[in-house]
Length: 109
Length: 84
Image: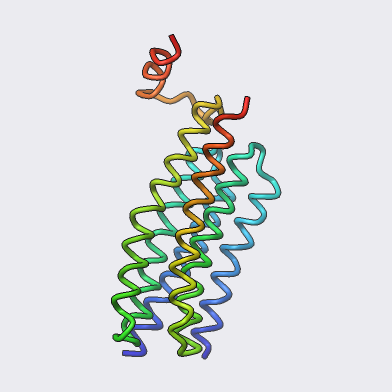
């Protein structure tokens, strides 16, 4: 049981460090948001399940936190990136597909 | 014990990378993204600290912290979007 706990929390912490590294090294705000948000969401899920393995009585609250993180973390990141797009932050390369552009041009008219 | 040290070292690495991005960040959105990532990491850290100290009170703190972190990101995004 303890071995499973240690494996889960250390794997989660590796994902935390990878998310931070992606945040530091990625070239533009859009790729940074993807690296940071996805890696840390998975890291939080693994870490919290690891704590739930050694404390089964805490599982309801831990599952509540996991559901909350999985629901709100992508929403917050998406809101932030949409506001960056509307403020005109450029991507590092010219995007091949840009579905949001025509939508906002039409809205501006 | 050594596993706990590895865990906290990796978490500290993630937080330090995010702080460097907040200091270097060219746009305000980079800085808010750094705060966002730090908040998620701290939520996981609080739950692990609750397990190490064997005190379920920290779980409630983690729930409230997650809610406030989400609100903080959304409010900052809306504020930066409205600013010209």
